[in-house]
Image 1: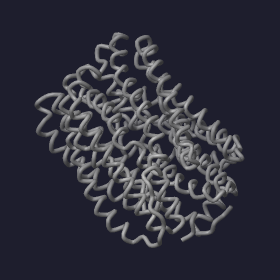
Image 2 (image 1 turned 90 degrees about the vertical axis):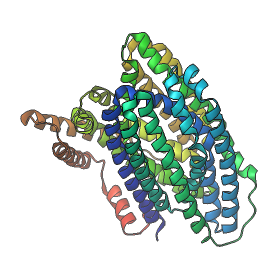
Image 3 (image 1 turned 30 degrees about the vertical axis):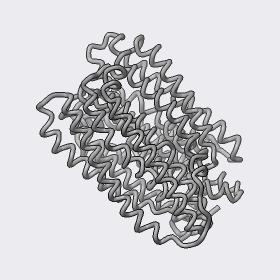
Image 4 (image 1 turned 135 degrees about the vertical axis):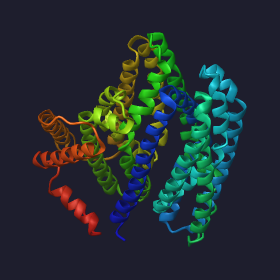
Length: 509
């Protein structure tokens, strides 16, 4: 199979799976919001902020190490080297995963009382500690499948994991919700833990079967090859994750200082209602950017600068074109999205405020992936640390003065700073030709034009929000967007030729 088409198919499989999982996740999240309330989701978000730091410690950069090492040796047909690299990655995962699990269990009460100021969170944090070891090992497996271009195995695992999670949470919520917010949060946490353990058993069986198919010789990979990639990422990730955790702890405190009587509920609306919808389209971007890392790694190792520049420019175009479409659509139909998904307009104003940031957020994701493929993972983490430090400072300063909109300002500043520094570094490494009018201005104009057309049509035909109406609105918006983008030159002969080459298995360059 042609390399371009294989990349496209792998990315398409992963994005389709991630989209399905994200759709189910958003729907399930809506169910949870209605079941446990915004205060319960706010408590759950606080618990997950501590868990995020624990996950960072448990994985400690092993996914990137597995992806880069396996891609390097797999590209050379050195099956023995791939197996040796994975043994070291799994040993590394086991050590860090076990350590993180023990530490989180021991310090659960301390973290709940002294960091979160929420003693009700202790029980949920202890339950989450059980998931860290299997999650860490699964992170290494995920890196392996991405590197050998068999992402469908990751996709299958994700589907099964999500199915188990939803089933477990639904059953546990029916038992625990009557006992209060603390137990409702515990139900959500236990469902996630059960699904992580289940996913581990699925992945390890799949991995054992897959690794046996590798052929070829090679060398014995030393642990320092793993640590040289993972530890720089890990140490900087600890700092960044710690800062992010502090940021999320400060938000409810700042909202209370501002005078919001329902600080935890307000935080829950932004973090559990608006942000999941904003991040929903990232399933596409995440899938394609994840597949970029092994591609860039191989071309960079071979010294093929032309291919690196080509892949990067294509990634930028696709990301901006897609993100402009999504940002315009969410801004235009924010109220309908919230009404259909959550049966309430409560989060619509926050969704409308955050939607314009989507192109910046998604472009940052892709840029970081390219930099990691070029071996600049330490730089990306330094930028992320600076970004997180700025965010903590701004949350401390702005949220007590501006309330929840101060938090939204923080998100904007944080994402813009991160993206600017990442792109600046990338442009110093990759000789990439960028036509700003084509990849930025034309999609932006098309998004604004499509939004205005849809707003005019909506004013002429008042409607009641429903799933069918929302789907129709989105279809009309997409058609308008593509038509305007084509007229404005965003979709030209080069793009049609490139896509045709991918579909026909011809490498068009």
